[in-house]
Length: 83
Image (tube, rainbow, N blue to C red; front, side, top):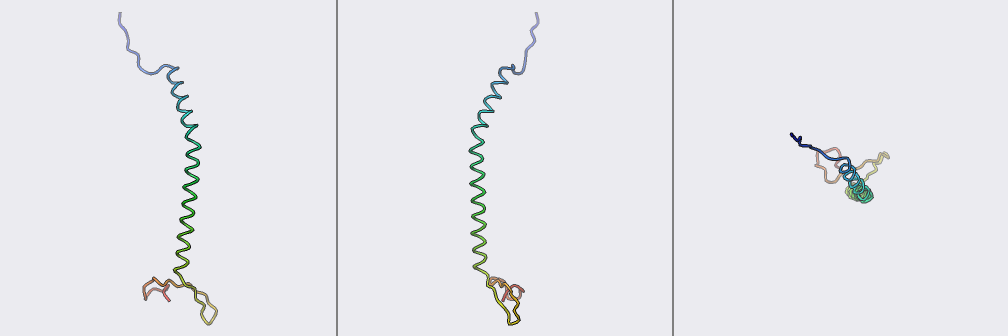
């Protein structure tokens, strides 16, 4: 009698695997959500910190005609942004 080798998984094995996967995803989703929220908060804080440094580096001048201009003291002498 010839026997045919069977390959693959039974339906019970697949259901157990899917159940374990669902449990792991269920446990990991809140942690991932918290991580994403913390990461976004850190990114926004870094942007505000960078913006504050940029504002401190610039000077605002008012010409006698009343025109307001922003000057970059770090710009080269020939640059139009330099004062």
